[in-house]
Length: 420
Image 1 (spheres, helix red, strand yellow):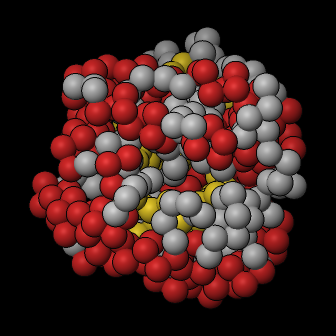
Image 2 (cartoon, rainbow, N blue to C red):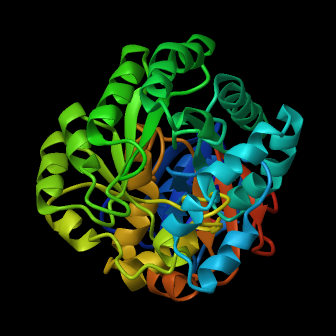
């Protein structure tokens, strides 16, 4: 007697589990939103009776993308800054003239909850249809209690609507707001004693993040804020060593952060400290590309030092509007020196580990969520080569189709052929 299941993806041309190696002529059995089994196509065809079958011969199956670093919720837009950068201004000059994060803060404070949700919804939908099945979203464009809570509530509303899993991060330490630039110590007190407790009490975030960078928060301040978050149950993350060797990677290792992100200017000492603490190195090549910087993060040094590397979009209103993780994988191969398989692992399993979800998603294994992408290409080399294009794909989040641009993939059958 065959076991009834919801779906069989059969005869897969090439399956990349997301951690190591690959499989050919294999199948994946899915039931109740989870992966029931992975194995040879003929074996699984003899074991399961699917309500629905997908013939995946000649196609590539990967885990769904885990986009572990985004700033997707914000008010207004900053296209004028892009034009300024193309004319020669750099990120720090724009920020010094009132642009950058502080510009988004002004516009976000003027936005109602419904406006934030309505503006973010199409961005999120595009990301999900492109293959992102787990997406982290940070606050950080409020920088006061009322607006930070509003942003986090908008993220919670989006999470209720989305087929993807949405992970929320509190980032009130994204910048010093205008009204506290004369007394940064008082703003840090407000962060630690008022904002973080309020966020935790309402259960609005899982992580606490801080921008450890020159002119923003120094290592001592960053440690103080992240310690306060930890005391209230918010796991630490950190923006580290992006524009300069600010010491953020050292803080990440010392406090045992889940991840340290950006790392364009990380030092050998920072790599060693993070490696010893098991901190995930999250690299954001889209931001480097978008800001027209020449110095990309040293992915090869991080990989060779044994760190788990993740890649993410950093989708935000000013320094990166890229929403496609496939595009980020292409940049990672072109500019970070990663091999295609390394880029796929970083976009899936690495991202899952950067969110503490490596046991739930990020690889194609029995018992994990059925977060999958079937690509109408034969292998990962062709996929990366087409990174700037809309490659035909079928995306499943928890076993439910969120995008299908491969004709004929989802016709129901009662009894698949034994070879499928």
